[in-house]
Length: 123
Image (cartoon, rainbow, N blue to C red; front, top):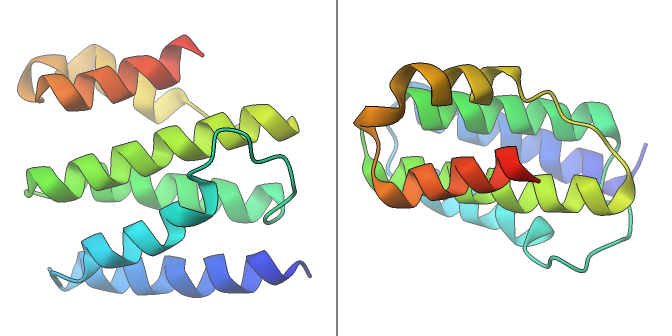
């Protein structure tokens, strides 16, 4: 198992617990995992594709379920970084949920969030 899998799996559990308990530390947790993907030039494998997909799906759930705009933005901007990373190393993430969200709920989000969504969908 790749070392990144262990970190991401642990962080995924922590983020999920924070989401379920409305824990304000969720932004810090998202930021910690987001740091792994923050360079658009990163080409080394961080974790396997299944682990990254689970993280992606959880971040979408955070984005979709949170009532806090800062948390929504942290989740979607981390998703944008993950999407750039996966493109660089040849992974493929499922975009169906994010496409559906964009089609259905586009008028309820800030322009910054819509910009991140549109960036992901245009890559």
